Amino acid sequence: MTDSLILEVHDLVVNVLTGIYSQETHLPQPLRISISATLDMALHYAPDTPLSASKNYMTLKEAATLLPEGVHFTLIEAVADHIMDNLFADDPHISHLVVKIVKLAIAEDNESIGITMSRSRK
Image (cartoon, rainbow, N blue to C red; front, top):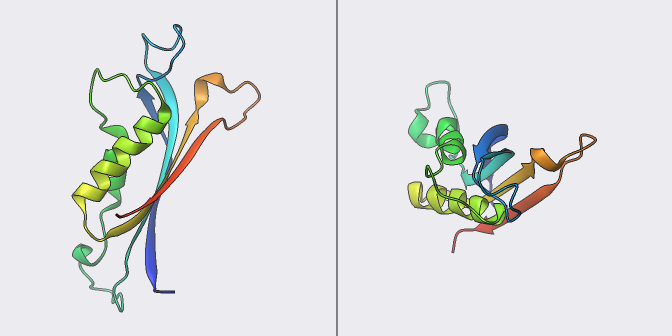
């Protein structure tokens, strides 16, 4: 197994146009989005190692929060796929992504109802 670095951003709440039912299709609904990105790891991280040896966490946050305005994603799987496409295109050092999305609007007793999508660079 090779060494790897996993950057994580968890529990971002983002309002997204998504859903298949009539009550879901006109208003954005809150999704809790978490992203784990596996990158090639540097041989060593000294105190003065530049950011270019890793990745800015804000890039992960932006991929989840800056979704195209006015676009309706029928499935939350499409939201995860969109996030993955953008992150893979943005950084060739990302080798694997995991995106977890929880639909907050349908939880009744603090359940986590949603998906986890995992994809390696092709």
